[in-house]
Length: 458
Image (cartoon, rainbow, N blue to C red; front, side):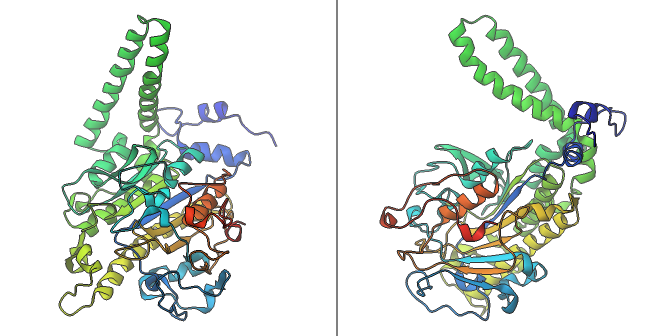
Protein backbone atom coordinates (compact mmCIF):
# COMPACT_ATOMS: atom_id res chain seq x y z
CA UNK A 1 0.00 0.00 0.00
CA UNK A 2 1.30 3.47 -0.89
CA UNK A 3 1.11 5.85 2.05
CA UNK A 4 0.96 9.62 1.73
CA UNK A 5 3.95 11.57 2.93
CA UNK A 6 3.41 13.89 5.88
CA UNK A 7 3.85 16.97 3.70
CA UNK A 8 1.38 15.84 1.00
CA UNK A 9 -1.11 14.57 3.58
CA UNK A 10 -1.20 17.75 5.61
CA UNK A 11 -1.09 20.07 2.62
CA UNK A 12 -3.88 18.16 0.96
CA UNK A 13 -6.22 18.22 3.92
CA UNK A 14 -8.55 21.11 4.64
CA UNK A 15 -11.06 21.51 7.42
CA UNK A 16 -12.25 24.99 6.56
CA UNK A 17 -11.26 28.43 5.41
CA UNK A 18 -7.89 28.16 7.14
CA UNK A 19 -6.70 25.66 4.54
CA UNK A 20 -4.26 22.96 5.61
CA UNK A 21 -4.39 22.42 9.38
CA UNK A 22 -1.39 21.00 11.18
CA UNK A 23 -3.66 19.42 13.76
CA UNK A 24 -2.50 16.65 16.08
CA UNK A 25 -5.58 14.69 15.07
CA UNK A 26 -4.56 14.81 11.40
CA UNK A 27 -1.05 13.78 12.33
CA UNK A 28 -2.48 10.81 14.20
CA UNK A 29 -4.54 9.82 11.16
CA UNK A 30 -1.46 9.99 8.97
CA UNK A 31 0.59 8.06 11.50
CA UNK A 32 -2.05 5.34 11.75
CA UNK A 33 -2.23 5.08 7.95
CA UNK A 34 1.50 4.38 7.99
CA UNK A 35 1.10 1.78 10.73
CA UNK A 36 2.67 3.87 13.48
CA UNK A 37 1.62 3.02 17.04
CA UNK A 38 -0.60 5.37 18.99
CA UNK A 39 1.17 7.73 21.41
CA UNK A 40 1.75 6.50 24.95
CA UNK A 41 0.05 8.65 27.55
CA UNK A 42 0.73 9.02 31.25
CA UNK A 43 -1.61 10.61 33.78
CA UNK A 44 -0.78 11.19 37.46
CA UNK A 45 -3.59 11.83 39.95
CA UNK A 46 -1.87 12.94 43.16
CA UNK A 47 -3.78 13.52 46.38
CA UNK A 48 -2.19 15.29 49.32
CA UNK A 49 -2.03 14.22 52.97
CA UNK A 50 -1.13 10.56 52.50
CA UNK A 51 -3.04 7.42 51.58
CA UNK A 52 -3.55 4.88 54.35
CA UNK A 53 -2.86 1.48 52.76
CA UNK A 54 -6.08 0.06 54.22
CA UNK A 55 -8.14 2.55 52.20
CA UNK A 56 -6.90 1.09 48.90
CA UNK A 57 -6.81 -2.53 50.11
CA UNK A 58 -9.38 -5.07 48.83
CA UNK A 59 -12.00 -5.70 51.53
CA UNK A 60 -11.32 -9.42 51.54
CA UNK A 61 -7.59 -9.02 52.22
CA UNK A 62 -6.45 -8.11 55.71
CA UNK A 63 -3.33 -6.22 56.73
CA UNK A 64 -1.74 -6.92 60.14
CA UNK A 65 -0.58 -3.71 61.79
CA UNK A 66 3.21 -3.48 61.76
CA UNK A 67 5.48 -0.48 61.94
CA UNK A 68 6.72 -1.08 58.43
CA UNK A 69 5.30 -2.76 55.35
CA UNK A 70 2.74 -5.40 56.16
CA UNK A 71 3.96 -8.21 53.89
CA UNK A 72 6.26 -10.47 55.89
CA UNK A 73 5.72 -13.50 53.65
CA UNK A 74 9.16 -13.12 52.09
CA UNK A 75 8.12 -12.76 48.47
CA UNK A 76 5.89 -10.78 46.16
CA UNK A 77 2.16 -11.31 46.70
CA UNK A 78 0.44 -11.28 43.30
CA UNK A 79 -3.30 -11.94 43.41
CA UNK A 80 -6.11 -11.45 40.87
CA UNK A 81 -8.52 -8.68 41.80
CA UNK A 82 -11.48 -10.48 40.27
CA UNK A 83 -12.08 -12.57 43.39
CA UNK A 84 -11.78 -9.62 45.77
CA UNK A 85 -14.07 -6.69 46.56
CA UNK A 86 -12.77 -3.15 46.12
CA UNK A 87 -12.68 -0.91 49.22
CA UNK A 88 -15.33 1.78 49.61
CA UNK A 89 -13.09 4.60 48.40
CA UNK A 90 -12.35 2.73 45.16
CA UNK A 91 -15.88 1.61 44.33
CA UNK A 92 -16.23 4.27 41.55
CA UNK A 93 -13.58 2.28 39.64
CA UNK A 94 -15.53 -0.99 39.80
CA UNK A 95 -16.33 -1.04 36.07
CA UNK A 96 -12.59 -0.82 35.35
CA UNK A 97 -11.66 -3.56 37.81
CA UNK A 98 -10.21 -5.74 35.06
CA UNK A 99 -7.88 -2.86 34.11
CA UNK A 100 -6.76 -2.01 37.66
CA UNK A 101 -3.65 -2.87 39.62
CA UNK A 102 -3.26 -2.01 43.30
CA UNK A 103 0.37 -1.80 44.41
CA UNK A 104 1.41 -1.95 48.06
CA UNK A 105 4.82 -2.10 49.70
CA UNK A 106 7.08 0.07 47.53
CA UNK A 107 9.25 2.27 49.74
CA UNK A 108 10.92 5.64 49.25
CA UNK A 109 12.73 6.31 52.49
CA UNK A 110 15.08 8.69 50.67
CA UNK A 111 12.22 11.21 50.49
CA UNK A 112 12.23 11.72 54.25
CA UNK A 113 8.49 11.74 54.94
CA UNK A 114 6.37 14.24 56.82
CA UNK A 115 3.23 16.12 55.80
CA UNK A 116 4.37 16.13 52.18
CA UNK A 117 7.35 14.87 50.23
CA UNK A 118 6.85 17.66 47.69
CA UNK A 119 8.99 17.08 44.58
CA UNK A 120 10.33 13.86 46.10
CA UNK A 121 6.99 12.12 45.62
CA UNK A 122 7.60 11.98 41.86
CA UNK A 123 11.38 12.40 42.03
CA UNK A 124 12.58 9.87 44.63
CA UNK A 125 14.76 12.23 46.64
CA UNK A 126 14.54 14.56 49.63
CA UNK A 127 13.11 17.91 48.58
CA UNK A 128 13.20 19.77 51.87
CA UNK A 129 15.26 22.44 50.12
CA UNK A 130 13.32 22.39 46.86
CA UNK A 131 13.56 20.54 43.57
CA UNK A 132 16.73 18.44 43.65
CA UNK A 133 16.23 16.68 40.31
CA UNK A 134 13.77 15.75 37.61
CA UNK A 135 10.46 14.13 38.47
CA UNK A 136 8.96 11.20 36.61
CA UNK A 137 6.28 13.24 34.84
CA UNK A 138 8.92 15.53 33.34
CA UNK A 139 11.16 12.59 32.43
CA UNK A 140 8.21 10.99 30.61
CA UNK A 141 7.41 14.28 28.89
CA UNK A 142 10.86 14.14 27.29
CA UNK A 143 10.24 10.55 26.20
CA UNK A 144 6.81 11.17 24.62
CA UNK A 145 7.02 14.77 23.34
CA UNK A 146 3.98 16.78 22.35
CA UNK A 147 2.87 20.37 21.80
CA UNK A 148 2.68 20.88 25.56
CA UNK A 149 5.30 18.45 26.93
CA UNK A 150 3.51 18.29 30.27
CA UNK A 151 0.28 19.80 31.57
CA UNK A 152 -0.02 20.35 35.33
CA UNK A 153 -3.39 21.23 36.88
CA UNK A 154 -4.69 21.14 40.43
CA UNK A 155 -5.90 22.88 43.57
CA UNK A 156 -4.16 24.30 46.62
CA UNK A 157 -5.44 25.30 50.04
CA UNK A 158 -6.46 28.75 48.78
CA UNK A 159 -8.81 29.72 45.97
CA UNK A 160 -6.76 32.83 45.13
CA UNK A 161 -3.69 30.81 44.17
CA UNK A 162 -3.03 30.85 40.45
CA UNK A 163 0.21 28.96 39.78
CA UNK A 164 2.11 27.04 42.43
CA UNK A 165 5.30 25.00 42.36
CA UNK A 166 5.03 21.95 44.55
CA UNK A 167 5.31 18.54 42.92
CA UNK A 168 7.07 18.54 39.52
CA UNK A 169 10.50 19.54 38.24
CA UNK A 170 12.51 19.37 35.01
CA UNK A 171 15.74 19.16 36.99
CA UNK A 172 17.58 20.66 39.96
CA UNK A 173 16.03 24.05 40.81
CA UNK A 174 13.82 23.85 37.71
CA UNK A 175 10.34 23.46 39.17
CA UNK A 176 7.42 22.88 36.81
CA UNK A 177 4.12 24.68 37.48
CA UNK A 178 0.73 23.47 38.62
CA UNK A 179 -2.03 25.75 37.33
CA UNK A 180 -4.71 26.17 40.02
CA UNK A 181 -7.02 28.52 38.10
CA UNK A 182 -9.13 26.54 35.62
CA UNK A 183 -10.09 29.67 33.69
CA UNK A 184 -6.45 30.60 33.15
CA UNK A 185 -5.52 27.04 32.26
CA UNK A 186 -8.31 27.02 29.69
CA UNK A 187 -7.02 30.24 28.12
CA UNK A 188 -3.48 28.85 27.97
CA UNK A 189 -4.51 25.59 26.30
CA UNK A 190 -7.58 26.62 24.32
CA UNK A 191 -7.14 30.38 24.04
CA UNK A 192 -7.13 30.26 20.25
CA UNK A 193 -10.82 29.27 20.34
CA UNK A 194 -11.78 31.15 23.49
CA UNK A 195 -14.14 34.08 23.45
CA UNK A 196 -13.75 37.58 24.90
CA UNK A 197 -10.78 38.19 27.18
CA UNK A 198 -9.35 34.71 26.64
CA UNK A 199 -9.07 35.30 22.89
CA UNK A 200 -7.66 38.81 23.38
CA UNK A 201 -4.97 37.46 25.72
CA UNK A 202 -4.08 34.73 23.23
CA UNK A 203 -3.66 37.24 20.38
CA UNK A 204 -1.66 39.62 22.58
CA UNK A 205 0.63 36.79 23.66
CA UNK A 206 1.25 35.91 20.00
CA UNK A 207 2.09 39.51 19.12
CA UNK A 208 4.48 39.73 22.05
CA UNK A 209 6.30 36.57 20.99
CA UNK A 210 6.65 37.97 17.45
CA UNK A 211 8.26 41.12 18.82
CA UNK A 212 10.56 39.14 21.12
CA UNK A 213 11.85 36.91 18.34
CA UNK A 214 12.38 39.85 15.95
CA UNK A 215 14.21 41.82 18.62
CA UNK A 216 16.50 38.93 19.50
CA UNK A 217 17.33 38.36 15.82
CA UNK A 218 18.04 42.06 15.34
CA UNK A 219 20.44 42.18 18.30
CA UNK A 220 22.02 38.86 17.33
CA UNK A 221 23.26 40.26 14.01
CA UNK A 222 25.31 42.95 15.78
CA UNK A 223 27.19 40.61 18.15
CA UNK A 224 30.52 38.77 17.84
CA UNK A 225 30.36 35.02 17.27
CA UNK A 226 30.71 33.96 20.92
CA UNK A 227 27.94 36.25 22.18
CA UNK A 228 25.80 35.39 19.16
CA UNK A 229 25.98 31.70 20.05
CA UNK A 230 25.00 32.46 23.65
CA UNK A 231 22.06 34.57 22.53
CA UNK A 232 21.04 31.82 20.16
CA UNK A 233 19.90 29.67 23.08
CA UNK A 234 17.45 32.41 24.09
CA UNK A 235 16.27 32.77 20.52
CA UNK A 236 15.60 29.05 20.36
CA UNK A 237 13.44 29.24 23.46
CA UNK A 238 11.43 32.21 22.16
CA UNK A 239 10.97 30.60 18.75
CA UNK A 240 9.77 27.40 20.40
CA UNK A 241 7.12 29.38 22.30
CA UNK A 242 6.16 31.23 19.14
CA UNK A 243 5.95 27.99 17.18
CA UNK A 244 3.70 26.42 19.81
CA UNK A 245 1.51 29.51 19.84
CA UNK A 246 1.24 29.44 16.02
CA UNK A 247 0.41 25.76 16.01
CA UNK A 248 -2.34 26.35 18.56
CA UNK A 249 -3.79 28.93 16.20
CA UNK A 250 -3.55 26.53 13.25
CA UNK A 251 -5.34 23.70 15.04
CA UNK A 252 -8.18 25.78 16.43
CA UNK A 253 -10.82 23.69 14.59
CA UNK A 254 -9.66 20.67 16.53
CA UNK A 255 -9.50 22.62 19.79
CA UNK A 256 -12.97 24.02 19.25
CA UNK A 257 -14.30 20.48 18.95
CA UNK A 258 -12.39 19.17 21.99
CA UNK A 259 -12.37 22.14 24.38
CA UNK A 260 -14.55 21.73 27.50
CA UNK A 261 -17.60 23.95 27.88
CA UNK A 262 -16.72 26.83 30.17
CA UNK A 263 -19.07 26.95 33.17
CA UNK A 264 -19.18 28.68 36.54
CA UNK A 265 -16.98 25.94 38.01
CA UNK A 266 -14.02 27.35 36.06
CA UNK A 267 -14.04 30.39 38.38
CA UNK A 268 -15.59 28.82 41.45
CA UNK A 269 -14.12 29.21 44.94
CA UNK A 270 -15.39 25.73 45.78
CA UNK A 271 -12.44 23.35 45.64
CA UNK A 272 -14.43 20.41 44.26
CA UNK A 273 -15.62 22.59 41.37
CA UNK A 274 -12.08 23.70 40.56
CA UNK A 275 -10.71 20.17 40.69
CA UNK A 276 -13.62 18.92 38.59
CA UNK A 277 -12.86 21.65 36.03
CA UNK A 278 -9.19 20.67 36.09
CA UNK A 279 -10.07 17.10 35.20
CA UNK A 280 -12.27 18.38 32.35
CA UNK A 281 -9.47 20.54 30.97
CA UNK A 282 -6.94 17.73 31.36
CA UNK A 283 -9.16 15.27 29.52
CA UNK A 284 -9.65 17.78 26.72
CA UNK A 285 -5.90 18.41 26.46
CA UNK A 286 -5.31 14.66 26.07
CA UNK A 287 -8.06 14.06 23.54
CA UNK A 288 -7.09 17.13 21.49
CA UNK A 289 -3.53 15.83 21.27
CA UNK A 290 -2.04 18.80 23.11
CA UNK A 291 -0.11 16.66 25.60
CA UNK A 292 0.79 13.08 26.43
CA UNK A 293 1.64 13.72 30.10
CA UNK A 294 -0.93 15.09 32.53
CA UNK A 295 -0.52 15.84 36.25
CA UNK A 296 -3.59 16.47 38.41
CA UNK A 297 -2.45 17.52 41.89
CA UNK A 298 -4.99 17.92 44.71
CA UNK A 299 -3.72 19.82 47.73
CA UNK A 300 -0.17 18.59 47.32
CA UNK A 301 3.03 20.06 48.70
CA UNK A 302 3.98 22.13 51.71
CA UNK A 303 2.26 24.49 52.61
CA UNK A 304 -0.69 23.70 50.32
CA UNK A 305 -1.97 20.52 52.01
CA UNK A 306 -4.55 22.14 54.34
CA UNK A 307 -7.14 22.12 51.56
CA UNK A 308 -10.83 21.85 52.49
CA UNK A 309 -13.53 19.91 50.65
CA UNK A 310 -16.59 21.95 51.56
CA UNK A 311 -18.16 20.88 48.28
CA UNK A 312 -18.44 17.41 49.81
CA UNK A 313 -19.96 18.77 53.01
CA UNK A 314 -16.59 18.60 54.82
CA UNK A 315 -15.49 22.09 55.92
CA UNK A 316 -12.71 20.61 58.06
CA UNK A 317 -9.28 20.95 56.46
CA UNK A 318 -7.39 17.79 55.46
CA UNK A 319 -4.51 18.60 57.78
CA UNK A 320 -6.88 18.37 60.76
CA UNK A 321 -8.44 15.21 59.34
CA UNK A 322 -4.97 13.72 59.06
CA UNK A 323 -4.48 14.41 62.75
CA UNK A 324 -7.59 12.40 63.59
CA UNK A 325 -10.16 15.14 64.15
CA UNK A 326 -13.86 14.31 63.85
CA UNK A 327 -16.67 16.33 62.30
CA UNK A 328 -20.17 16.15 63.78
CA UNK A 329 -19.54 12.64 65.00
CA UNK A 330 -17.98 11.44 61.77
CA UNK A 331 -14.56 9.85 62.43
CA UNK A 332 -11.49 11.05 60.56
CA UNK A 333 -11.19 7.92 58.42
CA UNK A 334 -14.78 8.26 57.17
CA UNK A 335 -14.03 11.85 56.17
CA UNK A 336 -10.79 10.79 54.45
CA UNK A 337 -12.51 7.97 52.56
CA UNK A 338 -15.26 10.33 51.37
CA UNK A 339 -12.65 12.72 49.97
CA UNK A 340 -10.63 9.89 48.47
CA UNK A 341 -13.74 8.46 46.84
CA UNK A 342 -14.31 11.82 45.13
CA UNK A 343 -10.85 11.60 43.58
CA UNK A 344 -11.52 8.08 42.31
CA UNK A 345 -14.84 9.31 40.88
CA UNK A 346 -12.90 11.93 38.93
CA UNK A 347 -10.39 9.31 37.83
CA UNK A 348 -13.21 7.05 36.59
CA UNK A 349 -14.83 9.96 34.73
CA UNK A 350 -11.51 10.71 33.00
CA UNK A 351 -11.13 7.04 32.05
CA UNK A 352 -14.63 6.98 30.54
CA UNK A 353 -13.87 10.02 28.40
CA UNK A 354 -10.71 8.40 27.05
CA UNK A 355 -12.56 5.14 26.51
CA UNK A 356 -15.09 6.96 24.31
CA UNK A 357 -12.41 8.12 21.81
CA UNK A 358 -11.56 5.51 19.13
CA UNK A 359 -7.86 5.04 18.44
CA UNK A 360 -6.10 2.37 16.41
CA UNK A 361 -8.14 -0.79 16.94
CA UNK A 362 -9.28 0.30 20.38
CA UNK A 363 -9.65 3.54 22.33
CA UNK A 364 -7.45 6.24 23.81
CA UNK A 365 -7.76 4.55 27.20
CA UNK A 366 -6.06 1.49 25.75
CA UNK A 367 -2.94 3.58 25.15
CA UNK A 368 -2.95 5.34 28.51
CA UNK A 369 -1.98 4.56 32.10
CA UNK A 370 -3.44 6.57 34.97
CA UNK A 371 -1.46 6.46 38.22
CA UNK A 372 -3.04 7.42 41.55
CA UNK A 373 -0.84 8.12 44.58
CA UNK A 374 -0.28 10.64 47.36
CA UNK A 375 2.52 13.12 47.86
CA UNK A 376 2.83 11.94 51.49
CA UNK A 377 3.14 8.18 51.02
CA UNK A 378 1.39 5.92 53.53
CA UNK A 379 0.19 8.33 56.23
CA UNK A 380 -0.47 11.99 56.99
CA UNK A 381 2.83 12.01 58.89
CA UNK A 382 4.53 9.58 56.56
CA UNK A 383 7.90 7.92 56.91
CA UNK A 384 7.75 6.40 53.41
CA UNK A 385 8.03 2.77 54.51
CA UNK A 386 5.56 2.09 51.71
CA UNK A 387 3.81 4.10 49.04
CA UNK A 388 0.37 2.79 47.98
CA UNK A 389 -0.49 3.27 44.31
CA UNK A 390 -3.39 2.43 42.00
CA UNK A 391 -2.92 1.95 38.25
CA UNK A 392 -5.64 2.06 35.60
CA UNK A 393 -4.73 1.05 32.05
CA UNK A 394 -1.81 -0.75 30.44
CA UNK A 395 -0.25 1.94 28.21
CA UNK A 396 -0.86 0.19 24.91
CA UNK A 397 -0.20 -3.28 26.27
CA UNK A 398 3.22 -2.37 27.64
CA UNK A 399 2.16 -2.93 31.25
CA UNK A 400 0.53 -5.94 32.90
CA UNK A 401 -2.23 -4.23 34.85
CA UNK A 402 -5.22 -6.44 34.13
CA UNK A 403 -6.88 -6.77 37.52
CA UNK A 404 -4.01 -7.41 39.95
CA UNK A 405 -3.12 -6.85 43.58
CA UNK A 406 0.64 -6.63 44.15
CA UNK A 407 2.19 -6.45 47.60
CA UNK A 408 5.97 -6.23 47.84
CA UNK A 409 7.81 -7.57 50.92
CA UNK A 410 8.67 -5.33 53.83
CA UNK A 411 11.48 -2.78 53.74
CA UNK A 412 14.91 -4.42 53.80
CA UNK A 413 13.75 -7.85 52.59
CA UNK A 414 15.59 -9.26 49.58
CA UNK A 415 12.53 -8.99 47.32
CA UNK A 416 11.64 -5.46 48.44
CA UNK A 417 11.40 -2.75 45.77
CA UNK A 418 11.07 1.04 45.72
CA UNK A 419 9.03 3.71 43.97
CA UNK A 420 12.11 4.38 41.83
CA UNK A 421 11.76 0.88 40.36
CA UNK A 422 8.14 1.66 39.55
CA UNK A 423 9.05 4.94 37.83
CA UNK A 424 11.71 3.11 35.84
CA UNK A 425 8.92 0.76 34.76
CA UNK A 426 6.91 3.69 33.41
CA UNK A 427 9.97 4.95 31.53
CA UNK A 428 10.45 1.48 30.06
CA UNK A 429 6.81 1.57 28.90
CA UNK A 430 7.62 4.90 27.26
CA UNK A 431 10.52 3.31 25.39
CA UNK A 432 13.34 4.60 27.59
CA UNK A 433 15.53 2.17 29.52
CA UNK A 434 17.30 3.42 32.62
CA UNK A 435 18.82 1.58 35.55
CA UNK A 436 18.33 4.24 38.20
CA UNK A 437 16.00 7.11 38.99
CA UNK A 438 16.32 9.70 41.72
CA UNK A 439 18.45 9.05 44.79
CA UNK A 440 19.34 5.50 45.81
CA UNK A 441 18.60 4.28 49.34
CA UNK A 442 21.94 3.64 51.07
CA UNK A 443 20.24 1.33 53.57
CA UNK A 444 19.20 -0.96 50.70
CA UNK A 445 22.60 -1.10 48.99
CA UNK A 446 22.68 -4.91 49.23
CA UNK A 447 19.40 -5.31 47.33
CA UNK A 448 18.98 -5.55 43.57
CA UNK A 449 17.21 -2.25 43.01
CA UNK A 450 18.30 -1.32 39.48
CA UNK A 451 15.91 -1.23 36.56
CA UNK A 452 12.13 -1.61 36.22
CA UNK A 453 9.76 -4.06 37.87
CA UNK A 454 9.73 -7.11 35.55
CA UNK A 455 6.42 -8.38 36.93
CA UNK A 456 4.71 -5.19 35.67
CA UNK A 457 6.17 -5.19 32.15
CA UNK A 458 4.38 -7.04 29.39
